[in-house]
Image (tube, rainbow, N blue to C red; front, side, top):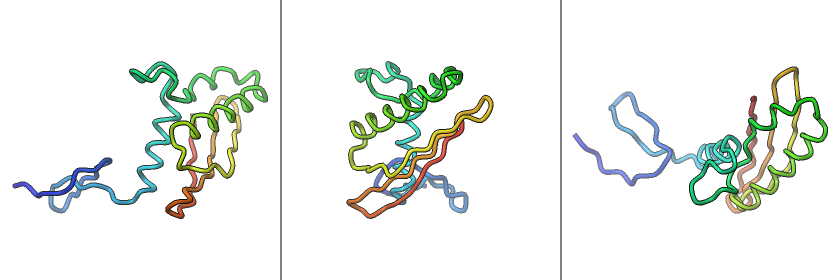
Length: 122
């Protein structure tokens, strides 16, 4: 049994009828793209070695917390302006708590009037 739908990513699984459906909520797609940008290490993406923030590398520099916060913040702004230029950053909050790194990004997508945030814990 097949159902014709326009294929878009990401997909969600509808348990009631057993089909995969495209997620129409654009904010979910934006968050997924941001997660890919944050968790991809530089050099990991084929043909674009500059792509990625590589957030895990910052976790091992906690003893230099202030320097790392500034470097990570600068890299977030640089990567988003290059790879997701449709996003305007309102604020970036970075905190260390013991051995964990927390990043909260507040952003706006002006063309479609979306204001949202994403929080990451590494």
